[in-house]
Length: 472
Ligand code: GLU
Image 1 (cartoon, rainbow, N blue to C red):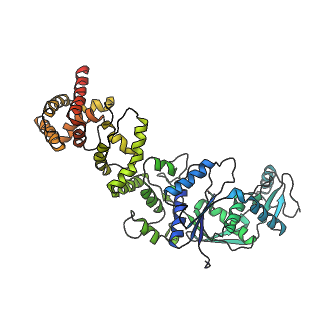
Image 2 (image 1 turned 90 degrees about the vertical axis):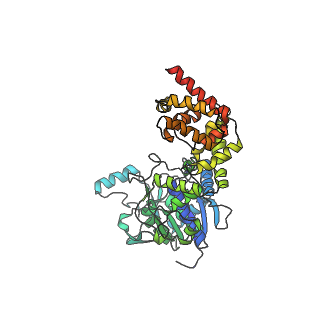
Image 3 (image 1 turned 180 degrees about the vertical axis):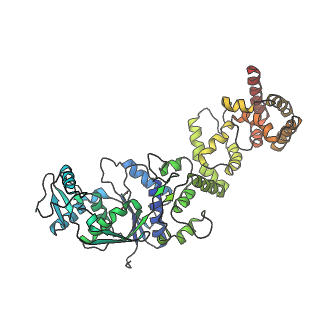
């Protein structure tokens, strides 16, 4: 590579949610820009008017900001919008036409298909090459693919050879004059002085065509690095129809940025040592493209969840409280009858931090504290209230009328009741937990009982005893 300063770009099309694969590509570009003192250019490829929308563009910008690929960082440049550079795309096409490297063709797709059928050779046969057509209705501009072979030196995939016979004379301008992706993408890379293109492997087949365009336009092509596709558990390429691919969705479900960013980096690459969960500074210090794997990378939801739980546990109490807050607030907004108690929340959060996998689990673990009567579904009720649970419940109600009201005493008292029935603590707790919280599983029980207080706890236990009596 030349000594020119490193310029990379991330060039998403704003046609849908921000795909986790796109996020991984963005991160690879970003990490190298940061590590090597290069520039990360954001280019929004918004030329597909039917499919793109400003909302998707904003989604990309927000998602990048969430990943701390920040527009305020000196390494960040853009966003540029491809649609605003249409004149440059057309001027490049014109240059190719003027120099005889592109030509107009008036064949319809039916005619092309007929010719292919007759000759037995797939694709467009170049039959308009020397017809001397100019622009006109129904005319597309095609690139005249030269003879020979095109060699792509890819930093991940190594040397990839393409025989030019296998590349048809591809379209540069549609018959309505609009530039095609292959052309617009190259011209923008050229104008933005991009010298390293890191992108998804699915673009590898485009690369010889694009490299030929660079040559034809008289500029040295960038270095290429095509990163492996992401696949699901069935080893099928992640798709938005089949799989959960939207970064926004993970964010909204309470995956934390650090975990997501670290996990995405490991899809095709691994930090040195046995640990995959590592500080971002280590990733920035170590990441190189030649260490990126060629084989498809499994987007493993279980592993992502494990990363997330680990990152949640690594947070300080304050960080966790801050991170959980939006999820708690959203729950209160949706449950206006509930009453917030900040000090109870502060007591409960550390108990949850070690137990949850995503932040979105927080409200359901503590909601019973803030609403008068927990909702108990029939299944949980039936399972928890099997004999001798009704007797245990009655005994606990009596015992709790006198116990000193603190978590330790509440636990010991309950345990003592259970022992008279030969029950372990977990079993004794079950009907009490369901009666008070509405759930069969949840955070430690006795701290919240202490918070709720004797009257409210006994009131809930009584309500359960009444329900039992009424169903006998
Ligand atoms: N806009 C293209 C896409 O989203 C990216 C092209 C590229 O990275 O060269 O797939």
